[in-house]
Amino acid sequence: MFIGFFLDLKEAKLPVSLREYLTLMEAMSKNLAAYSLDDFYYLARTSLVKDERNLDKFDRLFGQHFKGLESPADAPYEIPEEWLRKLAEKLLTEEEKKQIEALGGFEKLLETLRRRLAEQKGRHQGGSKWIGTAGTSPFGAHGYHPEGVRIGQEANRNFRAVKVWDKREFRNLDGHTELGTRNMKLALRRLRQFAREGAAEELDLDDTIRSTARNAGWLDVKLVPERHNAAKVLLLLDIGGSMDGHVRLCEQLFTAARAEFKHLDSFYFHNCPYEALWRDAMRRHVERTPVNQVMHTYDASYKLIFVGDASMSPYEIREPGGSVEHWNEEPGEIWLRRLLATYGNAVWLNPVPERYWESTPSIAMIQEVMEGRMFPLTLDGLDRAMRRLTR
Image (cartoon, rainbow, N blue to C red; front, top):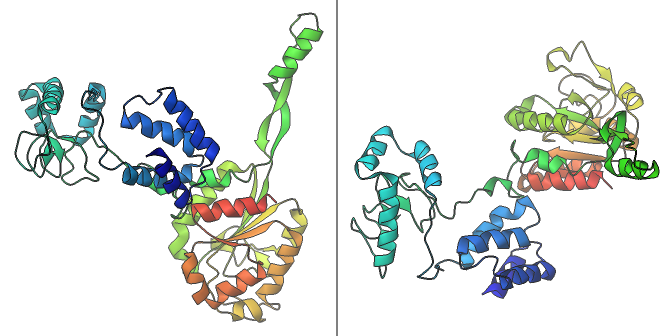
């Protein structure tokens, strides 16, 4: 059973190693999971999953492989009353709470559930008493009851269950979903270069111990500057036109980047960088910063990140005067290559799904100039982009 589960994980491309599998087997031999399927699930997830992005995939494979597996008949069915009370506050209406109290309260509900688990000998379909499916019993699946405990059902139907089993809580961490506020910072943390800067305010415990020992036991406190992420990032964002549909996603990315990087500066461009950038889109025609000034202000130690859909007329990239907003004396490609020559560590993040890139000529052209350093704006794409920037 266990080796089959391990092979299923390998086949699904989850990065699990034989060493981790042996660790799980060692934990099982010490009876850490006992006879509880829930305990085994948490033990297996802790032992085998190293990256949060794989939690949802692990949950799905676990549910498929151990589907139908039941605990021993003499195992206790324990549902914490405190858990049920808190969940009821969110799931039950005031009228339903009064109905439960009239029947004896949550204590009565749990007592009845335990008694029926002990009495019932097989599967039950329909009805209003036994634990089964498609009935009005308060226990089971695919039925309806205002004070139910759902057991063995994959998803909500009437949204009346007090306890939900096998709930997938990590689906939005999957590496191929679009980014959200919850997981964006996680991906940006790949780009970390810690350094200690500023005033010495943090206790250096190891040095304090050494210094105190050398000082014949007299306390000698040593302080060091706080550790900060020293990575320096220059963020250039496409704005306007076709990017209007990606404004929310770009706002989330900008907020996450501002929280993660102490050294961050940003400018806007439209479609393709030309001879000038701007900080305020409303005043871009009067307050512009020449690209040459940007390249002289921010040295080559900065990581350059473009954010844009790269969807435009090919003339905007290859021809003078191709810009839709002004007459550009030099093609956008020339300015893009100048920026790449200055900043050796550069990537392009594209909010357009990767499957559409080949059908848009301008995306292929930008990708060629970037020498393949274009990544989709998903958790997996952002993670790969940050790894590329750390080379």
